[in-house]
Image (cartoon, rainbow, N blue to C red; front, side, top):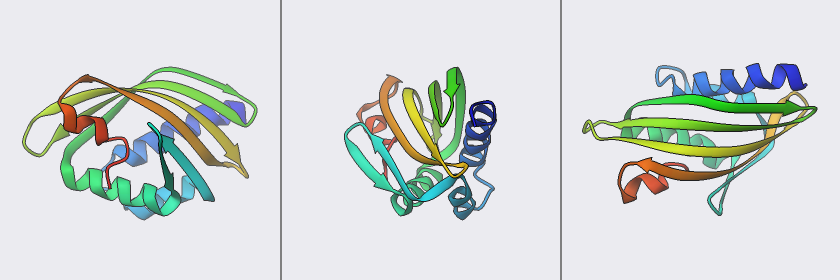
Length: 130
């Protein structure tokens, strides 16, 4: 799936950051047993959906700029920058280093670390806010 992995990840990012799309549609990108590890926290598929809903509540806009992407077989890795703009107008930039595993054509695991490049203490929680 390596060639398709890059476009699949980019499609996920597009759907994740398009706040006009139905959050439930994100389930189509992820396996039912999906796990996401973010800075020491573990999210299930339902937690991830709650996370996406929370971001849409707290943020006015979210953009993801992929800096690096490597895909091999059923694995992939990205380095990307998330630019979040809150409803208040405050913004933050967060660097994310993520590893992905695919199963049955969908993502089964994302293991990521985040680092706030610009923003406040509250921005450290954006990667797993519920």
